[in-house]
Image: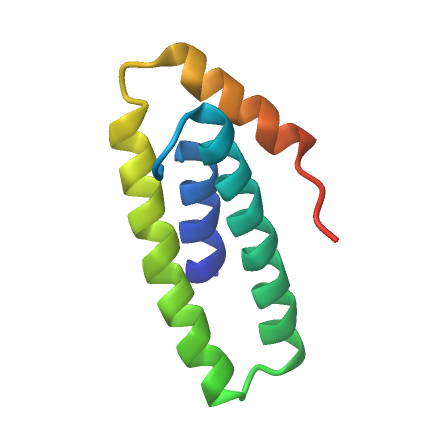
Length: 92
């Protein structure tokens, strides 16, 4: 659940280069990747390579979340735009 918690935090809080649209797109992509990774981990809980990948992804998602939090800490409109994009996010 640590991976899920960290990823959801990163998804909601949000960063990267570019404007709100590109940040929202990256947030959606990371969310979908996190969901996919969790599904794989649930199917193969003893796969050590998958566990390593999950730990690396958790670190990336946490860093992304911290970057987004800092970037949008004073931008309520940016936060709202990214939150809307997450509501509209569709994973394959």
